[in-house]
Structure formats: structure tokens, C-alpha cells
Image (tube, rainbow, N blue to C red; front, side):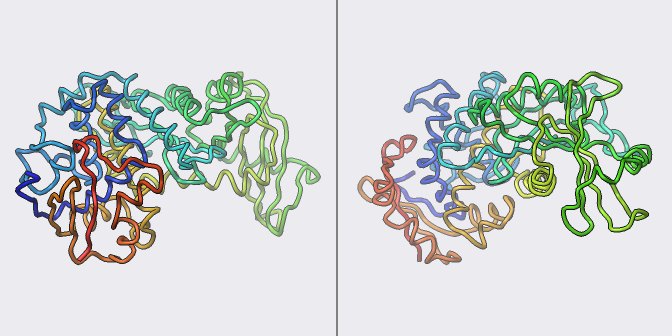
Length: 430
């Protein structure tokens, strides 16, 4: 196929190859498959990664024309079938996928993708059409209960990058899923008692057992919003005025020790935020924290960053976190972990090319760049040449991707691509 050349509209996806080399993707998939470079299994895993980058549910032989450069990108002469992918994923356990996430996370931390100071945890619930009997989940009081698959994400709020995730059925509660999620994050971020990251979470995480677990058995601190209701507002309104410190016009804070009444969570600290200028207009929000910190810093800088996890879902869920296929957790763990690799490579690509591509969501980027640019592919000596035609911002791409082998050597990265049998890669823009 390389000798016959290739022409198609998926050659923009080859822009991810140097990002894979920089990230160390090949080592990650080889360790996950427990196979050597010459074997087919790591290349099948790469097909899953690139399917995620294209934001498609399947790019398999039966539903897609081959010979457009996609199969060559994975070092294969064919597009692998559904059965081959199922067998690949079925051969690996949940623990294998979690080990992959830790390996990938350590590589990303070394490249500066995480600061590890403030994290956000949040469940992402995906409607499921499984025939299995399972607990229904109700989004709100006015909605109909539905079957869902749950993905529990941990996000670095400073860099807006996902650290790790766990998944489960709709029966799994936040209190049950969060300890395992934080354990994965701790392995990746190398937390210590001297430097505890702050984890921010919404009211759903207001669970005594979870707060107690984080305080006594992890190297994290947790800040969670307490449920807001009339009884709480009355209680906070009755607090003495001298408990509050005015920080600026219309904003005051207070802090006091707190103990849950119903269940024992151990000693905690309650942060109280008061908004409004006049007593009749006061509105209160209360938060529980496992640490006695600076309430102004935590309430005005750290906690508002929790919304970055919602922004992440909106922008990147099309990579593979917006659909619930099989409920076999080992298969879903493997497939969704491949999407995590794709997201990491795309993040590096976004940093390199800048605006406007860096601001596009995953679906827009896939449609406009990864399968929206016409080009051709040929071999010259030991180098695969990819020519892309009429590319937006071609000058910016030319600065990063032309004469690519020399640029990679300057970064002390071997330009030979292991899954492409030692070929190098270069780009031309016309």
C-alpha cells in the first residue's frame, strides 16, 4: 500500500504521529497488550485510539471504505473488524486498563500536563440502551428514570486535563466510586502528606463516609458544597454578625468547626459564604472542608474551577465518553482508556497549532482537520511523505511539521516510528 501511494481525506490524522512519539503512546499500548513491537495487537490498539480521535463509533471494514490512509496510520494493511477489536478488549481486565491510565498519567505529568494542586471530581452519566436489568437513574425530579452507564472523572482544574477515570453501572454511588478514583489519581500525581492536592466536588459528594475516607485514608483534601435549603438558610442567618469577615462589598466569609449530626465523619471545617449588602438580601452558601485552609482562596479561586469538568465533558465527550455500548466493564475500560490516549495526543497538537484550532471541540477538530483535509501519501527512501493541500493556517503548521525528523531529533526524540517498521515521517503543505 505504501508503494502504491494513498490519496484521501483522512491524512490530517497523521499530524498526531509526532505527538504520539513525544508522548510515548507506543510504549503505553505495548505494555497494555503485553506484546512486542512486531505483533499486531498494539497496532489494533492504535486503531482504537485513532477511531476515538475521529469521534466515530466505528470505522470498521463493513461500514467504511478502506485505502484512505487510516489503516496505514496504524501500521496495518487492513481495517480491523469488530470481532478482532472485541477479542482484543476482552483479553484484558479492568486492572490492565487502570495500569494503562497510571502509565499514561505519569508520562503526561512528566510533560507538564498536570499541576496537581487543585482537582475536580464529577460523575458523567451516559444513557444506556442495554437490555440488562439495572437500576434506573433520575436526572432530576421532572425527568423519567433511565438506564445509564457512569464515568467518574478526575480533572486537573489548572490545566483542564483529565488525570484518570473509573466507570461503573448506574447502581454505583459516588461514595463507592470516589475512593478508587482518588487512589488512581494519587498514583499518578505522587501525592505526599506535605503537599496535599485539594479536591473540589458538588453536593452529590456530600457523604459522611466519603469525607471521613478522604480525611483519614488519602493524601487529598476535599472541599464539597453542602445542600442548600430553607433550614440551612435560617441556621446561617442566625449566626452572630461578628463571625463574618467582610472581604469586599457584598461578600463576607466565616469559618467554624463542624461535626455531622446524623453520621460520624470526624471533625471538619465549615466555610460559609455570605452574599448581599443588606441583611434582608443576604444569601448563604455553606461548604465542608477536610482542612482548615484559607476560606477566601478556596471559595473564590479553587471551588469555581470545578466547572471546568463540565466544560471538559461538553468539549471532549465525543472522543468516546458520550456513548454506552456493552456493559462489560473490562471492554469499556479498555476502549475508553484508548480515548484517554487520543485526548492526550490531541491536547499536545492543540498546544502546538494554537488558535483557532485549539479552541474547537473534539468533534469540530475531527471533522475539519483529521478527516477534512485532502492529501496524498508516498514513500521516499526511509521517509513517509504526507502532502496536505489547501490547509488553513498552513504557515503555522509548516513551522512545526516540515522537516519533522530534524525537529524531533532536536527534542531528543527518535524520529523512527516503531509501529511503521522504522520509517520516518515528514509533511509538505501545498
